[in-house]
Image (tube, rainbow, N blue to C red):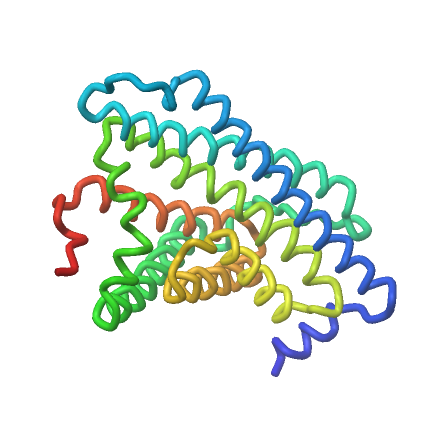
Length: 261
């Protein structure tokens, strides 16, 4: 009851509030589009530099290593552009004297962070186990595109992009700018959490239905952490730990572990 009352009390009403919500959504969409274009541009430049389309002989494992480096470069450029534009938007779109990017340590410090990470890993493990038992093909579909790259000699590049770059960029955008702004509109806490989780999931549109549900649920959990601890540090650390463990698991797993035969 108290959460609902707080949610309603902190959500101003009126045409001005809806305009603010529309503005923040439009700015966030523009950030995603610009960052995506920059990422594709970086990948195109990499292809030209690496001459991947030229008919020539590649050494064993060279093509996979180049592909991993290409994907990493595209992701890192996307992430850097996203972070830059989010900070610029944060400086311009503040609702009076309010920053959408709080980076203080949560109350309880490292203990709070550790418990938040542990809870995420337990919940994700339970959900992943259920998906694997119900539809192994869907489970493999979501992981397989990265599994081969994790066996290349440049796999550690993706570890940096997924474990550091993605949490910083995506949490600053979705649980920072977007959630922080929408939280102060008629969407309130619940609407902001749901909308940001769904928008974040749409960035992973190539996933199976199970994967999209997982991303949405994780997004809701990260929004809860942002609300409960009052800082982006908690969702950033949880996001980074989750991604890093997945990359490390794929890098060191047996070659046939995704077999569904």
